[in-house]
Length: 218
Image (cartoon, rainbow, N blue to C red; front, side, top):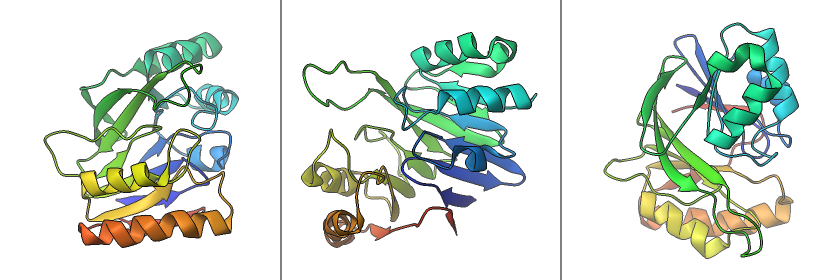
């Protein structure tokens, strides 16, 4: 399949004419990523992972676009785009479904802790075609299977470098690319990536940085 990285947490997957987009948020080139998409997976409700106005516009323009999201996000989108309500699906952890010709499995349940005074929201990680894993804002590790392509939340207010590295080591995917990098400048990227690349390689993971709009076959 073809994987295209957009700014921050958004990724577009294409295979056999199917287009699946994950986490088209406000930090990303949302309209571009959604062009021609048949399905969208949303990990959680934060704006950097779901641009609600853009999603509502996309749902209004398309008769086929389906959205899969945690209950709160799905309910909000149904309120904003009632004409597309039947195409907006609630996802629970531990489920399996098809979207745009891809098989999807869900993991997790909640967002990583930001601070005890900041409410924890639902977060779903998605494994697509047994290959690409997008964890959203969490370090939930898919159980009982091998991930081939790991999307690594490289930096966030809720994480530190040691946790990022431990996540990469624990998943042990052959290849990894960064997501959730929109708050880092070039210097910060190099620092975080140097640890992920060096230590991940010791456990069999080759890390590669993708520029916004860059595509790879996975």
